[in-house]
Image (cartoon, rainbow, N blue to C red; front, side):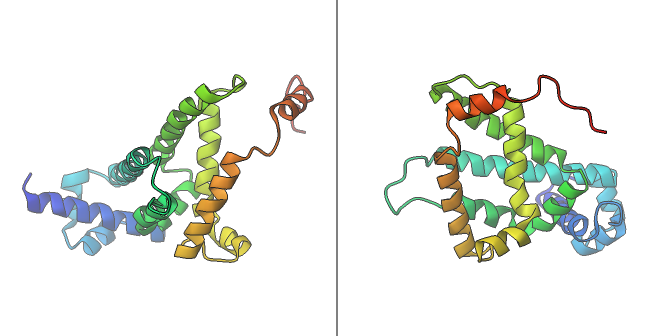
Length: 213
């Protein structure tokens, strides 16, 4: 069962599952429906993945690999010649575009842990490099900052209707991808407050978080 044809069937099943989970949600998607879309038997789905839960994990692992590959490409192209670089926002959206519904629904349902954790892991690597260039020491952990950065990045996918409305252009269109890339570059290269202002605001925080009533 390790033939090229068998591996192709496995990929078809995975892609069909990504589609069904995205359209119907994990609970409503069925092995039978996924098998029909992949043009295989339900038995072959179970042979490859064993259960719907394991199939979902395989979907998440695939997306985590896609994200890692994009990250590797970015790291090899950090200093392009003027006008000859690549818009990696567009590259990311093109690579993940077919899985957008899956990602959005999975995040809202509290799933896609592998994908979220992989992006957070890669974000932590970038922050480690950035921290070495900082004039001041970080006051919160790298993991905490990477987690929040990941949530902010994924919010564009979850809230894309609102983002598109605010930008005045479909964020998933070529013009929208270009504008988003320029916005992110501007935001990340220009802090909104200075270190001294941050220190003053931090000093004003309650010593213990207030309990909610």
